[in-house]
Length: 141
Image (cartoon, rainbow, N blue to C red; front, side, top):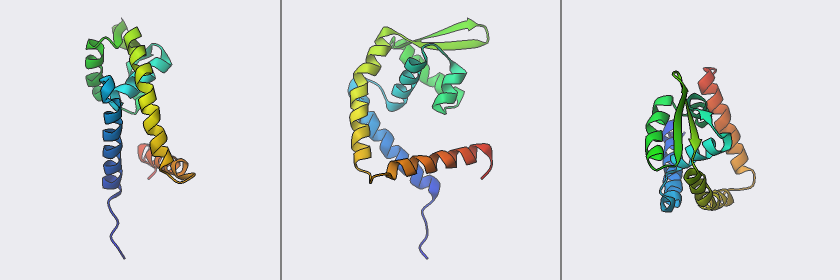
């Protein structure tokens, strides 16, 4: 019987390769794939409370809060505190434009990656990864 590779190592290797590919595709727009995801989620929501944004991105709040200041300094989003215990994020017109400009590069890479897969392969991978994440998060595995 051959020894299987570690599930975590295999998934991390794939994640690093994907992140690198997306970062390269988005580099001409001055953003990383993480920043693109943040901007796009804010764009979809309009104004969004930061805890809800972190939850939607499946990021811990600390990581999200560290990722936001560079985007704010570039004028891509505005952070506001409507109450002492609440902070929200809203895209600026420059942020809206950045997402719009970068989206075709993101779409092109998505199309290339999905085109390299067999029919149904991505749906199966996504379903398996989602199920695994849910089980691990809920403690049922």
